[in-house]
Length: 110
Length: 114
Image 1 (cartoon, one colour):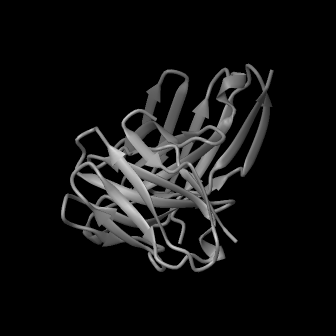
Image 2 (cartoon, rainbow over the protein chains, first blue to last red):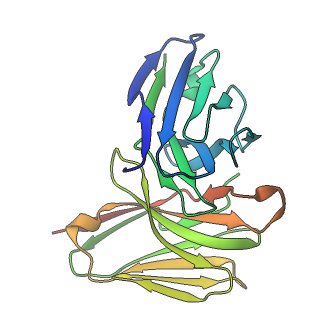
Image 3 (tube, one colour):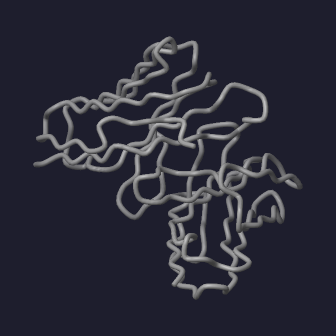
C-alpha cells in the first residue's frame, strides 16, 4: 500500500530470540498503530502512538515494546519471542481515521 | 476483546449477485468503517459512516448503520470476481481513553465465482 512500508516481509525466529519490526510512513500522519492478525481473530491492537513522542498500550501489549523514533517511523520490538507471537503484524497510520496499512510482516516463531 | 462480530463468516456467491455482510458491536461509537483485505495484503479502507448517519453510498457499496441495534451492514451490488476478499468492520469508540483506537471484527470471507 502506498505510503506505509513495513520491513521485513517475512521472518522466522526461534523461541527466545529478539527482533524489531520496522514501519515507516510518508503520509505526514500523526498517529501510528501496530496490530496483529491471527486466523479467525481479526486485527487486535498491540500499541499505538497518537503523536511523536507518545505511545500507549492497546489490547494485547504483553511481550512487545515500541518506539516512535520520529513522525515517520514506529517500530515494534519482540525482546524474547514466543510461539504465541506467531502472527501477521500490520502497521497502520492515520489522522484520526480511516487508517492506511502496510502489507504486513509474517512472523513465525518456532 | 473484539468489538465487532461479523456475519456470515464466509459467503460464496456468483458474479452479478449482491453480497451482504453484517457487523454488530457492543459499545457507543464515533464511527464505523469497512475495510477490504486481499489475500496476503494489508487492509484497504472502503467506506466510513459516522454515528449520526444512517446510510452511505460509494460506487457499488452501500453501508447502513443502526445505532439503536448497534449493527451495520455492507452491501456490494453486482459483485465481480475481483471483489473476492475478506471484509472487516471496525469501530472507533466514542471518546475517552479509546482515542484513535480502531477495534476490528473477525471478518467475512467473500468468494465471488465467475
